[in-house]
Image (cartoon, rainbow, N blue to C red; front, side, top):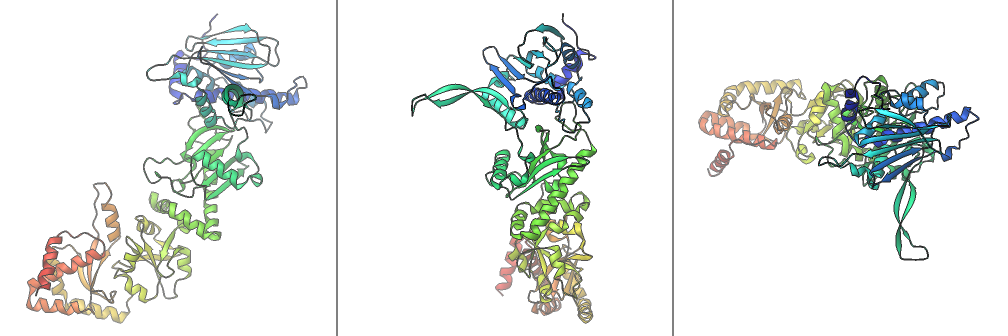
Length: 626
């Protein structure tokens, strides 16, 4: 006699089948996990019940395919279920026998039951039009079969079974235009699902497969032969003693798991016990994947619960600035939602994530201190991400990351840390100086670096588009402020030099006003400067927006455009200064032409576009021909 499910309505079952699980292949993971639980239960019972004679080596899960009848069987020789247990566990949606067993044995710390919610079984109906569960319990002489075609209810009958355990038979749905259910009978598909989700189930998952073998008595002829094969690895690498794992094993695991053709730069193998226990193997790749700096890249670690893959990429376990890390985390201390595909917000998840973040930072710090050449390789691939972490979220994480960034030193001609820079600062030096540009060579030739170099102060050369944003987010390091050599606030003059410059600027004020007008006020000011030694002119900026920041932001595919507040600075000791005065007194129109050329030169030095290149070219030719 068919019974209705004890849950409120058919609607609930329909929702679980069609909504809770977003990926149909999950059904095999859920049923294998249930079989693993059944094997765990009989094994733990055997430890306390002398009437149960079990050798753990004999416990296994078997997969049987029948392509002709379109059935898939998942068989285990575990604890089995009585009629009452079939009624309670399968007749009531969300009633979990695994959870009950775990609660009854909560004092046993080594009880690792995977399933807890009792809805995983019903994922079978995503691919099946009918499900049969034949089971014989270890404490019963009778076997029973539970039969259901889904929402219409179920029935339980007495049946025959010579062995203990459970056999779940799925009668697969017919194929449709949108869904090929037959693929779940395909050997390769089953292999791939088990490899992906259930590779580390501690019991062997066995299936009869077709292998090509040499014919008996032949050296060259092959034949197809059906043989039993264990499809899962069983023992996860991360649960082995790391002292017994070779570098080659780590490298092979990484390359196979994450499809990388190169070995990782570093391995972080961690076993943590305490408030929240977990095992993890994290890898720092030796290079960035091709899509790392694109929107398509997804960060995250593979998340397992007792060896069963729950999430392919758990993004909550990694901060954005460590998104390059690959690896796995295995824990039993996270409460899962009923589908296991997403996690509830939980403090333990945050504890694990914080621990992982600290492990990664410590490894990078150790690499920086003890193997700087390796660290430079890492930084070449992922330094931009570390810098991004400094200025992202309004610089909230800058103190965590400031000692991990590297910049090119004009004095040492190589990458250095901010700490190295500060430690080597001269006694009279007040600021950390930096200059931005497209390449080291171009920055080194900027007119603005002359004065700082003359003081023998080191200058950080910033060539990455995120560098200056990073510097501005930091603001200072060990109470030393950052100073752009192209900033109008740069102050390296003596009091006497300042007074002379101010005096000459007053003398030329009318000249500069006319020059500024001739540029249609494209610059905020025109003035003499002492910062230039050999060059006639340069551009400096006023405020927080520099020339390089203007270029970066305006190059972005947005409507937001900004403009740096430019100052045209003229070398008061250069011959051009006298020439400007002469032109002002004798030929103001000619002065305007010279001004446009000087401004165009200054923009070219900074790598800025010239709005009117034809006009500038004609002016230069006109002046040269005189």
